[in-house]
Length: 169
Image (tube, rainbow, N blue to C red; front, top):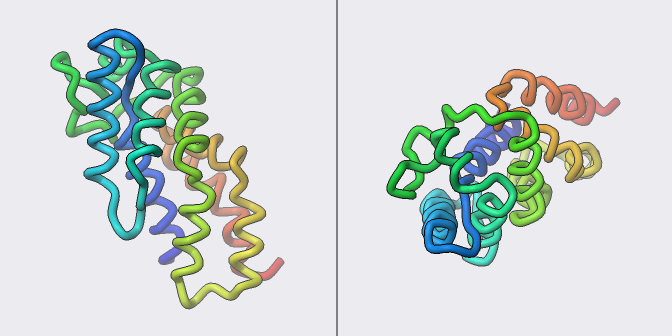
């Protein structure tokens, strides 16, 4: 299903981006690396601007911390974003923080709504239903599960409302 693929791509792209920033040189370097990585991943399916990318970088560093981001393997010892960041598994509290930063900095709900709007097979009623289902709270929960390495659970949690909207119930 094209919509499910768009949601998965957006979620993975968003999760690839995440890793830290703050007040000292290491924090600033980490935040900048995350921001730059996010801008590199920005494309026609997932577009972010510099302010959003900077917000994510700084927020990740502030809320999760450089040391934890290194422990998780999101950042390398030289404070660059790890190429295998999608394999990272965070503790629940840090995953919750990362998801909160992401949803609040990037407006994931608007990005997903825009992707759904580009899919000609989805009616305006279905789009409206999905916009109501994919609230910031629901997206934060989904991204948190993804950051915890629970992608199947995250996808499953979003499939029920998606299917309900697609079937018109």
